[in-house]
Length: 507
Image (spheres, rainbow, N blue to C red):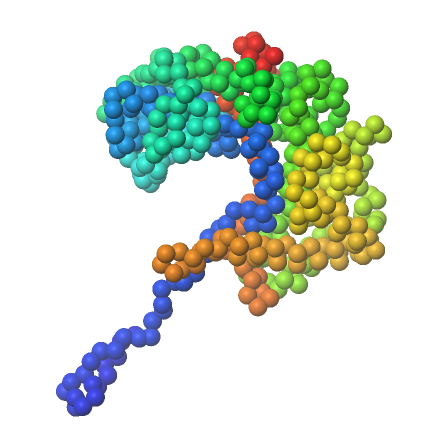
């Protein structure tokens, strides 16, 4: 507030204004951080090695080709960075529009073209003003001035499609003729002022994000992804990607597959297929994949359990009360009895059985189910061997890792299961706060950025938002759709299959 205060020696006629009190500028910026328990690192690192050139945000083969097309055109005509940015955004708007014209409704097997959701009002009206739609910001199809090049740029550089630099430039493995033959008409559409959806029907059949396999850019990218010549150097990233593609294609050819991560992941993790199949038994990456998929069940269990715990925090909640919430969800039994009731995790021949998968289908409460999954995963520490075990364990003895969980369950055998749940609650809350502080950053203006959703003050917890509980992506879904949209795989109502062209590439 502001009050008049008499100035010293000024009598009643003079006064000055003194301002105060007031709140200072905010010194703490609380944000919703990702990976609050930091249990995902090993799986993410392994997946990056096993699927180089594809990430969790690169589901479309034709964006690899589109960015190569823009790079080739900009290089040929000498465009500067601002002009290249504008061309790239306008071309992506054209691809989104023509893809919507081909499939106004979303496809079951392929995500929509990037930007379609943001352009939905314009697309449903039938008219897209290209310049307006391509302007970066909340009113356009994307906020970033480089459109969707950012999510794809690392993969495109790793594959040799683009070179490194501040703008897309042709890389050593870009086939400019192939990308112009497949998507060159997008450059013409990008220079139009207005695109009318109803006028794009004939173009949409060859320019849609789903159509790459039938155009010249598809076989080029398919050969680049599958890299038939990569076998000579088995340690190279190209060779590893090829092995992963061979595994995926073989599972598709021998199993009913509707969803890549769910169905292919299940075949990689459990049963004797990897050892008895004449193809997969000779693929070196198969053992690493088994270990990674098995480890991801434990990672997902920690994430689900933490999400559930945060969900129980309503208002100001003592840590003890949160621990009691967890305990109340569990049966009154000892840890030893709990462990003895778990389903078998391997056959008499030492083959991994789908215990984690079956536990999640049993329909028990989330806390009980995920605690069982963690205990099941811990049991595998002494059952797996060789490269599977190495890929499963990763860095040895880390907190919340399989070996750590095994020790916690073993030492707690005489205790009640509910007591173990209380101890784990304290462990997880403490770890989440420690991870948030480790990620905290002081900004240039002096404020502190703290990435967390759950906060503790004087023994009381409160949350600012909910935690996600999804599994860490294994990139199999994205790899599958990239392969499908460049002609290696094909989807029908019956599921996925390998095309004849795909068989020739991966065999």
